[in-house]
Image 1 (cartoon, helix red, strand yellow):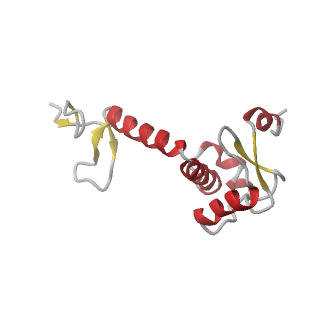
Image 2 (cartoon, rainbow, N blue to C red):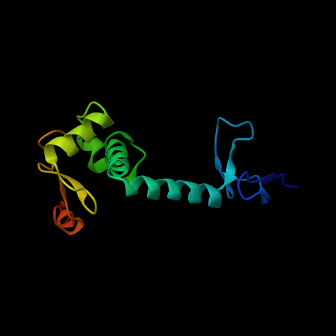
Length: 142
């Protein structure tokens, strides 16, 4: 018989399996407190709130850049980190200062892009362009 676990948010009982809860090694039972549905709602709400402000949106872009370049478990790591592309900003604050003070670009609705596609994410090599323009700037697989 399967033990039940109650979600900390919606209070519904579910079987204590990875089908209903995410893994969390720091917890005694090895599962998150919230069911997967509630956890997704919380995370989606957080990202929506962050992306409303320019600083929040740039923080999301910053985290995505770091992940693409340094996390081998990501699908797109092979196109960035494996090719040796790095993020050459000291911190998020350094990145934010560069975008706001030097580029002086409205970033809403735009994607980050590297001017030299073989270069790093660094001063002088990043810009913000529309998604349509960014999709034209890809390597072609034959």
